[in-house]
Amino acid sequence: MSAPTTTTRLSAHTTLRLGGPATRLVTASDADAVVAAVGAADAAGEPVLVLGGGSNLVVADAGFDGTAVLLASRGVRTEPRPDGSVLVTVEAGEDWDAVVASTVERGLGGLECLSGIPGRTGATPVQNVGAYGVEIADLLVDVDLYDRRSGEVREHVPAAELGLGYRTSVLKGRAAAIVLRVRFALGADGLSAPIRYGELARTLDVAAGERVDPARARAAVLGLRRGKGMVLDPADHDTWSAGSFFTNPILPVADAPQVEG
Ligand SMILES: Cc1cc2nc3c(=O)[nH]c(=O)nc-3n(C[C@H](O)[C@H](O)[C@H](O)COP(=O)(O)OP(=O)(O)OC[C@H]3O[C@@H](n4cnc5c(N)ncnc54)[C@H](O)[C@@H]3O)c2cc1C
Image 1 (cartoon, protein in one colour):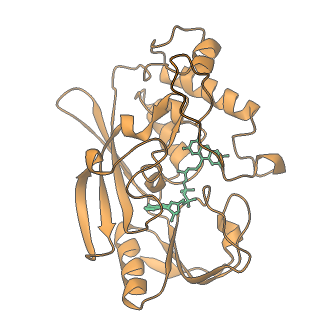
Image 2: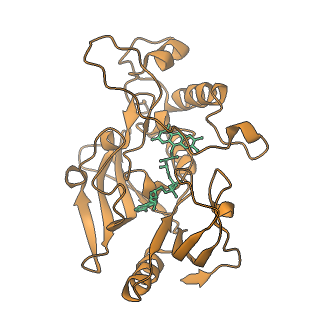
């Protein structure tokens, strides 16, 4: 179901609290509604802005002259895979950190180092979200996409076809396809992904490459992020941001210092 919302100022939907009105703001509460809203705007020749959590967006005070589609689809499913791992299927509108928290609570390993990142799940493959030594590409199996050029839904598009690289993918900056659903393969042996990030390994007091209780890793990551003002707090203006404005330099040396992604 999709429904026009009453608030059209986009500042209510961005973490920077910036952005004037959209001509129309549609809240899409399932994948079909996303397809319907974007398809209708495309057919009418209207510009479309896909909005997740608005945590990686700067919207002008002038607003957006077109249809903004707010992704609010919900649903998380888990099923065992033949290799002993667990397939987690997540609708695009699910809050990312809530998804990470729920997998950690179930003892599933893999996503814990991506704790505390704001936004919705559908956006995570778009810039191959990453932090503390883990990125989405490490866990992603496939996605379901709405292809705006053909007007078709493409199911189970393999991660290998998304051109995932350092904070990039073929989806980024083009808006040609919308992620409707994301599938991850997570570990079911009760351990985190290998701890690769030096600062995190020191905080956990483990050697690089060791694996720990995912809940312990999540708590440590959240602590480190809070110390840097990188966990959004509605009451603390200093945490209102759109994340990192710069990517890390890639240095051609073996022991380059590690900095946050
Ligand atoms: C405090 C803070 C900390 C952050 N830390 C990190 C970090 O450690 N690592 C990191 O990688 N990022 C980080 N970010 C950036 C941001 O949280 C991520 O990029 C996040 O995935 C954006 O999700 P969103 O739902 O808010 O996307 P939005 O900001 O709503 O959208 C971002 C872009 O993606 C497009 N988009 C959104 N959803 C979809 C979809 N389903 N299909 C296709 N396109 C879509 C939008 O149209 C827009 O162009 C941080 C941001 C903040 C504010």
